[in-house]
Length: 275
Image (cartoon, rainbow, N blue to C red; front, side, top):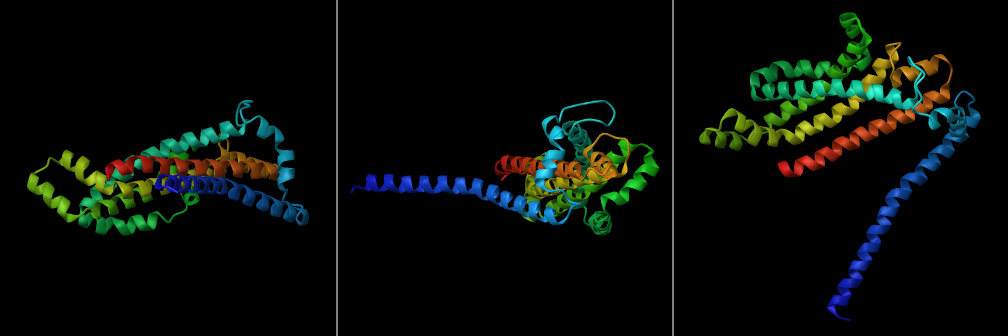
């Protein structure tokens, strides 16, 4: 057998191994999901208050088939409920990203400011989103601005703290070289500081997007009369429609998972070039 033939056989084995690995990556989660659904169905047989997956599908069949219906007011399909929540998240998260990165860079460059403010930020970041709702409502008097504030105040801390840490972790040699070359501040920021701190910034952004999605759900549950997936859950609870609550939770989980995957994709696309 020639060397070329051996390499061909090895390549075929590698290709088969990769193919089976990809199939396994798909089949394993599917099989696991079916097992969990079967356990859920079995548990629901002993607990009449919790509908099983079959009952949930039967009760919410119209919501599953018609997610785009709109009868006015808050009576809308799940697509519009999720879309309204996502719009609030996008606005609040964008403001949090701008403020968090800007303040984080300033604090990271100033050691005294970092020492003074970091303990305060560490305390504020542990406050749950629901705890901010009464303050937001009292200060802003309207549901929409209050919801945006809750998203902002929940998402800003991981971005700010991670950005400040990233700036502080910049090697001193980089700073010394920039000082020797007398780089302008703008060039130093875009060519030295920002690329070096970008992995930390993306870590904060990725954590913050999940927290922002959690925050809007909590805010909408408390704030009545607004279109959103959180209010949809609260309204379903008040009407005793547990199956609709479970369906909404599935939507929430899928959207949250999608947002995290989107941030991971952006991070993988941008960071290699920065390195």
